[in-house]
Amino acid sequence: MAVESQIAERLSPLTETAEQGAVVELTALEKRLLDEFQHDFPLSPAPFAEMARRLGTSEERVLYFLETLQERGLVSRVGPVFKPRRIGSSTLAAMSVSAAQMDKVAAYVNGYDEVNHNYERDNRLNLWFVVTAPDQERLEQVLTEIEAYSGVPVIRLPLVKAFHIDLGFPLWC
Image (tube, one colour):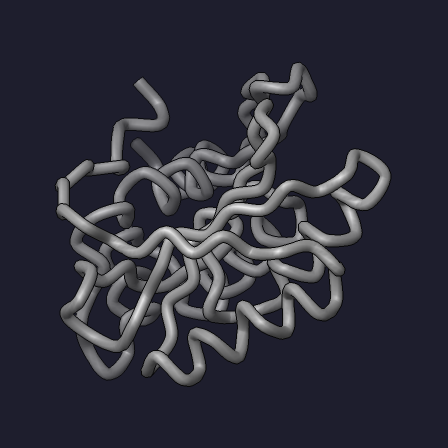
């Protein structure tokens, strides 16, 4: 395959349908970026340069794609997920947030670097998230600030028994 057609293939938009029914345009390179680095994220002084090398592109392009994927709401965060109790302190948390306040409270919760896996659920406890902090003091500070902002108690559900669930899966079959 000629270099020009390889480049065109990487840049040509491919259409996928999102769960909510919206059409999402992704390039072949964006799909590879999302699919190939769910696991085996490079642990090096320059991980994005290593990703770029593996993808046959530039580090700047990898960073650009990750930034735009986040801006488009297709990627919530890029970072490690540590096994519980290995580093710092963490807890699962749940809140009962009114429908009128949900977007505002969820956006506030998502503003914390310590928060990941934030989901709305169809339940009385309808906002669930994980908070991971360097220590218990910072963990409590984040949860207390969320309570103060929202006026809603945060239920702390610390890990009792660990189960490994691999959330990585092929995105583009």
